[in-house]
Amino acid sequence: MRPAVLSVRDVAKGFGAVRALSGVSLDLVPGSAHAVLGENGAGKSTLIKVLAGVFRPDSGEVLVDGSPRPFADPADARAAGVAVIYQEPTLFDDLSLAENVFMGRQPLRAGRRIDTKAMHAATAALFERLGVRLDPRRPAKGLSIADQQVVEIAKALSFDARVIVMDEPTAALSPVEVARLFGVARALLEQDVAVLFVSHRLDEVFELCDHATVLRDGELVWSGPLAGATPEDMVRRMVGRELSALFPKQDTVPGRVVLEARRLTREGVFTDVSFELRAGEIVALAGLVGAGRSEVARAVFGIDRLDAGEVRVDGRPLRGGSPTSAMAAGIGFVPEDRRQQGLVMSGSIEGNVGLASLGALSRGGVLRRRDERALAADWAVKLRVKFARLSDPVGVLSGGNQQKVVLAKWLSRNPSVLIVDEPTRGIDVGAKAEVHRLLSELAAEGVAVLLISSELPEVLGMADRVLVMHEGRIAAELSKEDATEEAVALAATGRAVRS
Image 1 (cartoon, rainbow, N blue to C red):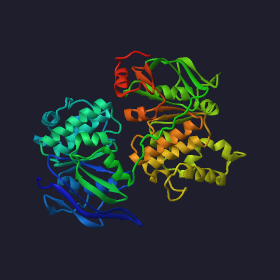
Image 2: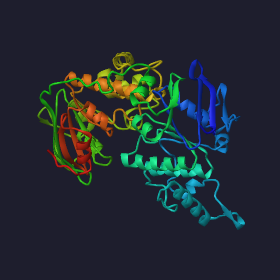
Image 3: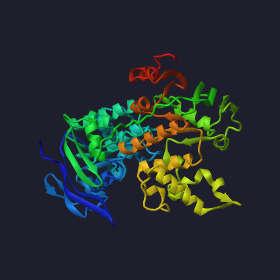
Image 4: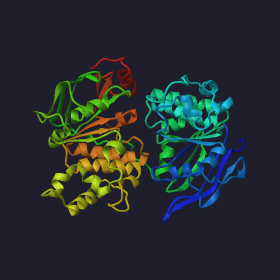
């Protein structure tokens, strides 16, 4: 094996009594992609921040080209050739791509004036090096997340980065965008850049990476080549136990029709969408990003207005077209973006759980804190939420536990219909199994579940029926027996007709 460009040796980092990392070591080799795996809270983010110079380790050392090189700050790490590409890039919208790449380091000509021509040419050369077609002159505003990440990678290369850390880079990307990003990553590997890849998506890890390191509770439990390993091996190492099934779906017999969507139309977004949800049934809404799945869910819940069509709950039209009317009719809605739409991140855990039940928890317009805490404590136990104190801000929880708090907020209302949009996005495999178990138990108890997911294994593993959307219309309705990867993919790309 070639010598490592960057190594960590026996690194430990603690925050008070919490040991985030304990004796972690790994090597990053030029031209190699190395994955770091682990559940939320395993120490991945802390390790990334040590490599980025944000945190200084309590013990152990960081080595560059075999020599100790402690990073005092992020600028020190960048000078050593380390760059981090985060899940949500932060570009300046009103500046051009070239200005974003060379922010604060613009090439100058006589009179210390910015050499715009040279800056555009250098940026174009970086994009060509990455194998992408982007105009250096265009503003960053309106750029997709995938293209924003490419700009961040170009910026890293402009600093002569030799190590690029990708932190959950594909969480918000479509399959097409993931494939394009992987093309960029492979171009980096061919140029002897070392890539550290952090992801919960094991299929992507096995597609891109040749080595992996598994962390659990801040400790290194396994590190080695991926050749000969399986996703099941990685899951076992990550969670410390056998997962009997990632999709523990119970068999149920669907009951009465609880919700009917009749010819729903929102001009320019989706057209003539009709479906039924039955008690005890999980129905998945599948399709490519931009097909209109989330928009249909938002319209059913009353967040977005409908231009035509109606929603019926237990045979009665849902009047008012508002979330208040939907909630009163027994509908719960777990949105796609839990941080922006599902939670008040600065609010307490107990406050967030009680957020949808303020009427029941209040008397004379005054919130009964004792009842709020009792409600939160009850659901925290039921959903196995890991927390220190219910009064802590929900923002301190891991992604999986935050998702459980969003679910608790709605389940405390005893809904007859639960809409869940990307319920396992950005959470680890152990937490995914917990969320899947919960959805299965809800269906077994008679709740009708509408599951929106971009992950095909999740759709096939959890759904009793699959509705596939293509360009704002339902292109196919498939039974569990007929729902295969090929059938869903054909319908999602418009090559199948509705059965």
